[in-house]
Image (cartoon, rainbow, N blue to C red; front, side, top):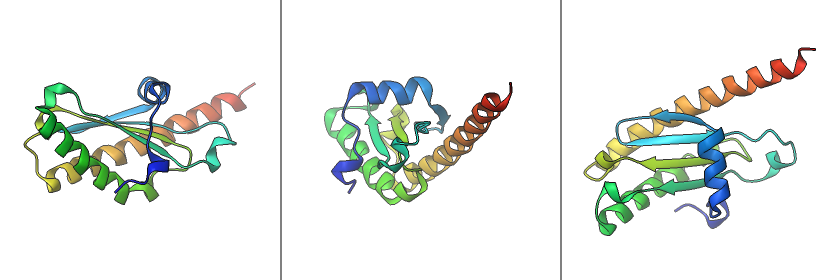
Length: 131
């Protein structure tokens, strides 16, 4: 279970992560990751949000997908840097997917997003150092 203090609740947090974060996708889901640039936020816990649109299926199916994703992300919170914003968006194929398939997609997408976010942070730091 994902502890309440790690849950993203405000729409501006979702928007910020989706618009300004790094995106990495898989067959059944897309991960958006935004690393914090403010040193004051780096001590804060990382926040995680889930987007499961109606295209995934009925309310029962969407809630099942969301519960599975919450459980998977809870096991991987240590891989997400402190203060980061993570949004996991389910795609329609997530409805019929088993736990293992969602796990494989999440691991791949999260690894890609982390690598991309670190590249983006290095480029931003190099740009700030140039006169």
